Amino acid sequence: MTMTIWRPALVVALLLGTVAVTGCSSSGREDQVLTELANLDKEQIFDKAEALYQAEDYEEARRYFSFLYDTFPNDPLGHKAALRVADTYQTKRDTASLMEARLRYRDFANRYPNDPDRDYALLMVGHTFMSRKLRPDRDLTSIQEALGAYQQLVNLYPDSDYAAEATDRIAILRELLAEHEWLVSQFYYRNKWRLGALWRLEYLRDNYPQYSKMDLVAERIAEIESVIEAQRDEFEEKLEERKNAMEDTEKSGGD
Image (cartoon, rainbow, N blue to C red; front, side, top):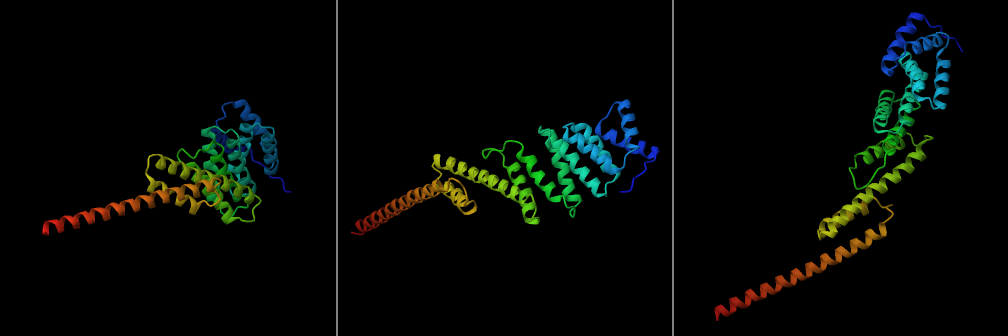
């Protein structure tokens, strides 16, 4: 491995840029990091950052990973550092951090379509959505976005080490989407909008055949079809009765 010799002026300029981004306010800490980086090559910087990450010192790890990516944006190690920056945000699990992580994973997937870690970035886009509780009776955007990321991973990288995990997540998300259709059909059914309920149930049946409540779906479809058929027969009988009555009236008038 070839040791990279850092020029102090270059280190200062690059690190100050990184510090501005990461929000470091301690000049004493800046000096310490400057001194340390002046004697490290890029592999050692990455190892230092990774050790901090494993120790769950995510903000400090982010400082080193950010420096490495900003300095070597086109280097494979710089790419890995970019993903690790996203990982440091993903670990916090609050809404703002998850959104920041998601933006960084997506940017990575879009910016580096040929990177060997792109499948991981797509996986983590999905995970940032699923890190929050997803419910079928709420807005479906997060479910659909997560599903799209996992499906892209499986479609583009069927042999990926993450394909099986993505496939499992897809099944969970499709169950949630199917449950949404079931809940909507229940609402229509309770309000006697039988045709609307039937359409939602038929859509559910045709698009989510693995839904866990498919037996109930089949029963409800059969029930609604039976009611609609009975109503149709009743309507036709009344129509026939009215027609006959009108004919009788016409005959009586003619007589």
